[in-house]
View 1: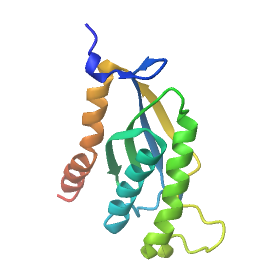
View 2 (view 1 turned 90 degrees about the vertical axis):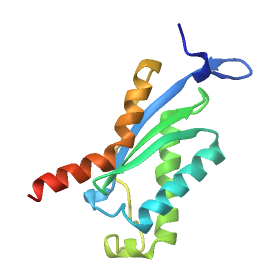
View 3 (view 1 turned 30 degrees about the horizontal axis):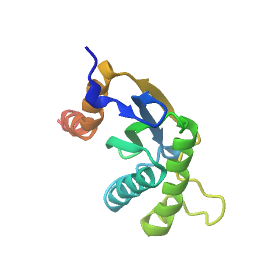
View 4 (view 1 turned 135 degrees about the vertical axis):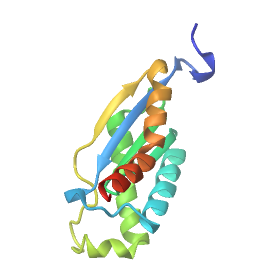
Length: 150
């Protein structure tokens, strides 16, 4: 039996589109921590709200990449969603987080994000597993760091 609570009803369609999206910082710089992490998460949620999709789960991994579980309408392509998230967030972070100037010192043509990204579509059966995986990113890193520090 299908879980009808997860379905979204549009004017001409019924859908459940979810994507696991990951992208990293340029040169894998570990800058997504502290104030940068707080601002990034806030900005990404604002972008999603403004452009009509939702970020159901979000977490930073190793301070150099981000995992998102995104739900969107069929009218929005994954390419456009990622373009909006990466482009707007980079611009906003460079303006709101002066500490990024240590790692990204160029004033012109500087890039916060690596140009590539990973995406996979998530069905109903995998959605809970992927959400749990994303939510546990920080916890797993702490355990690994503790183990390596012994």
